[in-house]
Image (cartoon, rainbow, N blue to C red):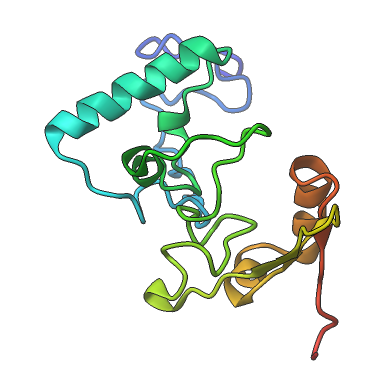
Amino acid sequence: MSGSVNPLLGLADMSAPVPANGILPAQPAPVADPGDFSSRYNTALSPTDEARYQAWGQAQAAQNGGRNPAADVYDYDMRGFWQSGQSFADNGHAGDAFKKPNHPTFSDQSRYHGVDGHQGGSWGGGKDGQPWTFAPGPSNMQMHDPGDLQRYFQKREPGNRLILQAPGS
């Protein structure tokens, strides 16, 4: 009967009848995000350092409105950043040294540039009050389309310029 409650799960299913045996068919697994590098390109820490890293993240979260940088591993090697002793810039950015190949501004300054064939873009400008410029490399263009990079720059890199090469150049 459509619109019934599955007695085993207690969930209303308004789109399909509940089978007589009360067991709903298996749902397809969510599609993995191919751009998620959370489990890749992370600096290994000893158990002691991992505990210190997690404590650092929680302390940062308490100071910064709940945002825990230790959890920001999708496109950045935060463990490497922490271990290196670097600090965040005034704009909240963490620098290029630990950007993973899936980061929109993964560059030739990252420790992962050249690893597994990944080639990052390059930064230029930034002198005498000039804006910084970023020319994406092959890995940036493989993982992000030009529109996504433009939106990223509008939101996260205001005042800096994205230099997109014309196709075939």
